[in-house]
Length: 188
Image (tube, rainbow, N blue to C red; front, top):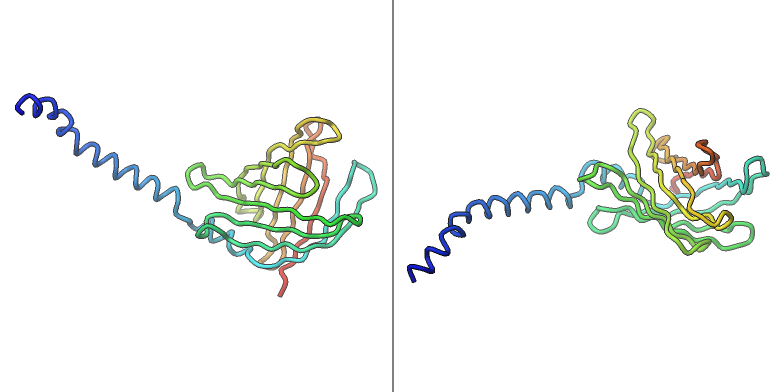
């Protein structure tokens, strides 16, 4: 018994350290998982939005236009914003889904996008600019016309509580080429 106690002394002596580490670990997880002010800011965009969409298939090409709706809602206890878009583009029913997150630990926004005009997932991340009331996200997506991933940039600007703009660019030779612009108005 005495021998067993001697073997356990180092473990027993370290028990307060484990307890401190456990408390620190629990606090780190609580900080990471608890929605904060940024998540509350995202929640202000919850609701139904009507939008006018303009997109260009190539620089200098005439634009195509369509109208649609977006339904935004915070999910998983206010941690993420899910967005479902529906419209008709050139006679084809369109549906897309986005998931916008703010990572408390990394202090960045993360966005994923899927739609029925592809089979991949576009992943973007970026930061909020208080001065311009805009979120700029960058990342890559697959371009089937080029047969490879291309760099993308998305800028979401909040004009006011009822009007937002989303602009999408692809990057070519270091320059931003606008491919899409969406004007959203909150449905009353």
